[in-house]
Length: 295
Ligand SMILES: [Zn+2]
Ligand SMILES: [Zn+2]
Image (cartoon, protein in one colour):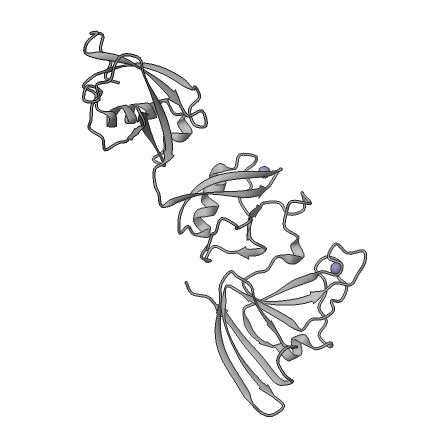
């Protein structure tokens, strides 16, 4: 810092530091009166703990109700700063394009972590940051689940503040706070069924069976001849006439009793979109082709 011993050339400044970032809350420094505010901001950065000196943060100085940053050339002399004036050092994320997101990490223990990511972050980028933030062990294989949808590396990530994000490194360890595995939906076609086994954790709940990509005969899939088992208890599921799609393009051809043909192509994002065969007429044919979604 522009430290100087000559009384008139320098002044003492009493800084109040943001305790969320700095390890100390008060700091007294002697500063040359011709020292610009932008340099004071820059120098205060060196008082941040090492983990914050990354380019993600900037320090601003609040003085007499006004905030100064790295573009302010105005000096203490220009501001007629007297001796022992009080200033506050503020720490803010530097890049406005970055967002802080909170997520639940399930590994050696369950924990909540806050990480900084670019606004349009990818799943890949999310995973890299999680691995940087995780310190319990070297495990790196994880499942990423956003609002009960499992996302893969190729998926886009439409994050909203309401998004519940779970990162699961070990699934079997913890109970209550991990998402229920029978509710997790994956890319492609999902078939729904009801578990009616009273001793199953999914009793009387919808169990989602992932069918992935490909061509499917939904009439055959929903017929009682095609058995579908609960992923929790292995008993047969009931009411398997509902389907849904996640993160894919699907097109279907359907034909009813009157030989009317319905053809449609749709896109499904990470928001689960349902298709019920019960709602729509008596079909004699219902085929769906499910393809990878290209961002
Ligand atoms: Zn661990
Ligand atoms: Zn079950």
